[in-house]
Length: 139
Image 1: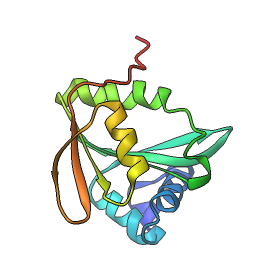
Image 2 (image 1 turned 90 degrees about the vertical axis):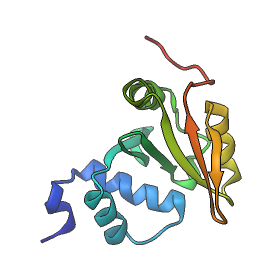
Image 3 (image 1 turned 30 degrees about the vertical axis):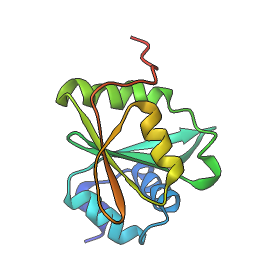
Image 4 (image 1 turned 180 degrees about the vertical axis):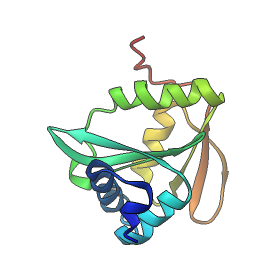
């Protein structure tokens, strides 16, 4: 059975996973897709100028964002912060994420939003958010 058939992934979700892989510089499409499906991650495609340029995945209070390199400074995070980040924060009281130690841009972005480092290992920083500092909420 094809991986996408296991959970009926939409074309948008598959494109988002492909862009997540490009943005994060990680594994192959089948391996990453299988991991996302097997772990019940929800996939939110990130759009810019009519194209899917990345994605946000979440599982409970855990959230990860990856945008294709050429769009990392172009995409508009406001609708995703409003629709996803605030929703997770309201539901769980916190949002958790991680950043590779080598990804200084990603770490700065998370800290700008209000994430704090709660632990680290040789490869990653583990972060938690309990209040969004960078206010986008339009409700």
